[in-house]
Length: 451
Image (cartoon, rainbow, N blue to C red; front, side, top):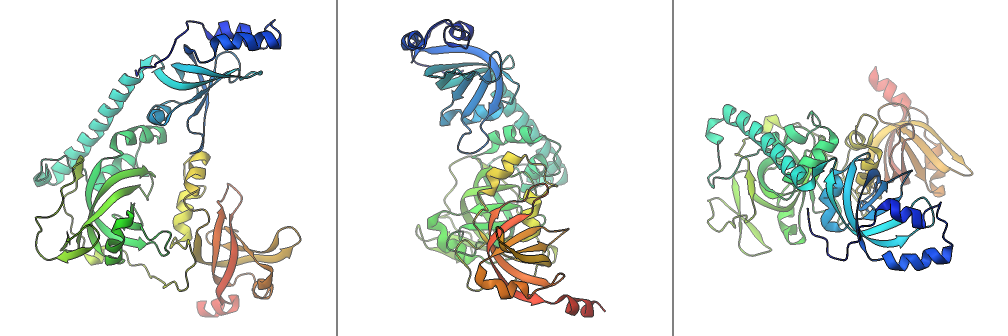
């Protein structure tokens, strides 16, 4: 359950509510004097979770209801992050904490140094054990199917457990039958584990701000994002789009869709059949023979058997060269972005908000169809652009581009750039600023080509 140091008092929430609550007969000065007696003391109470912080900045704030609405605000430390993820609105919890602030409203107390001991009549320790058992069962079921398909892949040469990308995708991918909350809980078991996988380079970061991000294709599109450390910069330069690479790394962030997860502490072991040998800490070289100097990963490794992917199996994508890329430019098709943030994605709005922070203020280059354009006193110079249906993008231009914008017509196909500032809502489109039009195919030309 975890130990809490400090002086405990056996006073209940109701006892303190009678002293400090709305119906107390004490004057404000009497309440202030009484608070000195309790401030800094630890209590153990039971209540109902009324809310959880939604963003990365307030994830550690939990509101608890004891009578009406939220009466107690819990502030949890960084090491309690996994416990916060286990609780849901409406859960009954037993918690301990230090009385730190007194409010003069329905929200009466703030507690710090908080520890949650029981969730819905089950101790946190038991819930954690159950979570690990569920994860182990999921792993075991995947291993059974993998062994049935390939009996020789029962275990790696080091005797490690084997979990290929396909196995993890079955548990956490967009076709999984597990709920989003269930995935988040299970991911706590896998996060931090090391893997060894093989896939195709689908994209590389284009600017100095995102050079360390490499997208890997295992099925279709981008399925894994590799995030390289600064000292691996030369290694990133060695790989190019459509390279078949074998890589190791640590499971970091779960996305749970076509883009499944991110990997950190990345190291490339092979490019095609060429082995990467490290002659020093910063300069990798390619070797044709197996190197005995490969540093073994000290942490637990979940290893994938090598999969040879023929070039014909890799979907062909026409890649346009980006010249004069701006800081923060990313190669991210509209369709891929909309798969994450569009209406068809089942993530919660708060999850989308959190993920949007990784895309906000990045520059993109897209091609779409002009739906509207004009200049308003408030909205300024803008254009509505269609990619799938209706107006998908609202592109804002500086005033000096007025002639360029107003010379286009509805139906024109344009290639444009802009900076992502606002994600789409249920009705509202994506909003991009600093718009620029690079090329225009007139609607009449498009119609003539169709003939």
